[in-house]
Length: 286
Image (cartoon, rainbow, N blue to C red; front, side, top):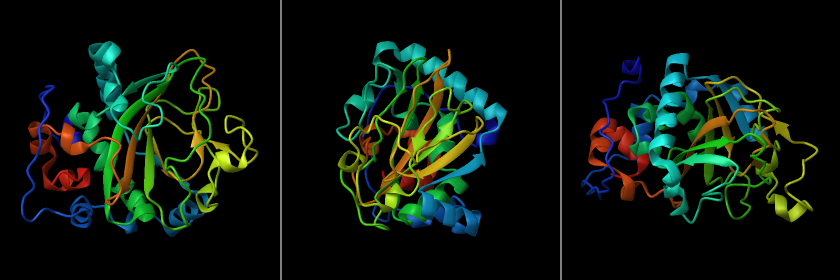
């Protein structure tokens, strides 16, 4: 099954290293081309919807074998990391919720298994990300979040500290659903069109924890990927079920923006060997 992912096995160590830059490093535009990410992978209708609403459901991208392998890997990582799970997130000044009492978190998934390579190399996902950010992009972070039963509610927020002019977008996220998303289990809510408003929710709402009259809750099957312009107001909702609601967030930014997770700091030699030059260019470690 893992052969489908077309990656080699990763030796899980805790070593960190600095990768020297070659003289002629591959740029992200070339990497996107080599990975097969072109705007032709999106229909004009999909592009228009993403432009207007600030999000787009790409449909089911992960098959059942991939989902099962990823879920098992996540379970094993949570067990092995224990109280240290998600500790990498606390080291970043750019991550809004590094530790949540109502959520399980994992960080630095780039270096934690070949199962996670698809999250930042899938051509259709990259095509949607580049439609928002342009070709001069990089992965900012690759993290896991699971809203626990009875928890998960977040205030509406944008993933950037200030409002930006429409079209001058700096950040874009993708949510990879490891479970079916529903109103009942704490799925993400978004307010369509707010990426164009040039306002942050706290500027116009009395309490961003409140429901917004125009918010939409993502409802989709496990294996689906939802792209959203991260200037679109969004947040988790409360999980009213008895099971965690699991997802992986593959978060991208423009090349001129700081990464949530410093990929050069964490990158392991075996990861670099496995993902090759195009993957490394997307991580901006070349």
